[in-house]
Image (cartoon, rainbow, N blue to C red):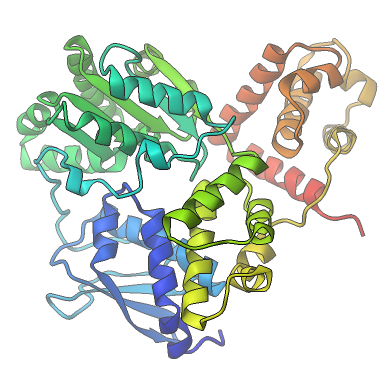
Length: 461
């Protein structure tokens, strides 16, 4: 590690802004706003952070850890250990954790959640419908969110928004809350992790009745990352009854997740059924044109001009995560301001050198290459894979090949179906969703798919 104290601390403004961008709409955002880097020890590779809070809960510390970790990697190219010091006491109080390590064990009591209803001051600026860039990948989700905010409890209830990390799910959830607030003063909005932690705290304190009443008196309940309910039987039981109570009263329920309800592992069937009572809609990775529009929108909000060649560079190099795209604009702006240099392509290359270096080398991946890799791995013949035969030894490799084709090429479902023996798009969609579900549950398959993707993305020598 060659970085010095001065090197790291000089980059803290960029790290901080990236972390704040990543945490918008999350409980940890307020924690980050009251944090400051006070030192870096190059020998121990430790970044010291002072936080103006007396108590930091386990979930808040984990959120801080994740946000700072990703921001550090984007700016510095590495992830130092994080030593958190509560500034009111002036010592670390057993909060030293390794950014890339496991969830820390705290000796402190879990900080209780607020019993107050949501207020407009708690909503992050910029997270509204006006600042949400709509494109083909998120058009349906944006329209559904607008409809819910205009006609709560009647149009789509519940509204279930699912998709990958950093694609705008939390943005839409916050936009709904912002639009509902003038008409509905009693809104609860929290992450599923906060819901779980508060329920566990209520169990320990014997105050589940108060916790239950607090949730069930609201006009609308908005939960981010509901997939964290997976495997938590007692918490699922509590959420089930809360859901039923609010739904029967016509109160709006909005949920976000990284996958569709049926693909959340260890989730009770009765919850899966209820999550599908309203509308489940997906947000996907934006197309190139949408990514360019996002860059321009984020630059406009910051009052800066970004040349077209830089817009193209950012859109071409950050393809799957809107949050990282926004973070890139933040990082570019910070570097321009600190170095007093104009924003141009050279500065963009310098600001994003770690991100671009870490990104797989671009390559035009052909469906033929995908099928060849799959056939070789599963020891099946090409003609059999593309045939109408549905035996188990052929169906699974075929599903994997369809999944990889969707993930790694620009082909539509209809085009993929045509390539795989003239199958219709619904058959292809079923195959893709099946592999996605298995990928969540099966670590061996997840590793196998990652090896396929790495092999196919590797540039030909």
